[in-house]
Amino acid sequence: MNRRIFLSGAATAVVAGAAGLYFWQTRETLAAGPVFTGNTPGIAINGYDTVAYITEGKPVEGSENFKHSWKGVEWRFVSAENQALFVANPDQYAPQYGGFCAYAVANGSTAKTEPDAFTVVDNKLYLNYDKNIQSRWERDKVQYIKDADKNWVTLSKSE
Image 1 (cartoon, rainbow, N blue to C red):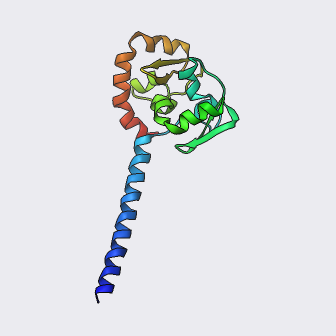
Image 2: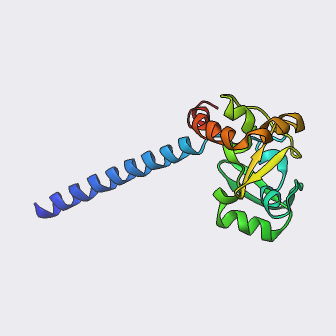
């Protein structure tokens, strides 16, 4: 009888643990939000190396030789070093708001981005629709970041 109770309890624990893991994964997936892929479906931020924006201060196209799958899309890098940096800490290098236009997110919507319209603030990458929008963004980026942070909570679930 004690063995039957033990096995029943163990099975219940396994099912509860699996349900908890599923719930955690679902919450993480929802919190993460979508990633902008642009003209290259399945490849993050049009294939540009997100690490290079921060380390080199410019957009650089990534290579098929250095890639990593994260958040359901492929991220490309210019070197094994950049790839390793990203793999070790993707949240540090991934663009804010999934790579969607930060100005658009600040204004309650999403929009595509262009590789050369970007800003790095406090070692975080913010991409913009184009250079004209980037100019608007630059005028009050601190407030736009606050607004975008609030809006992304809702937008990330609807994208």
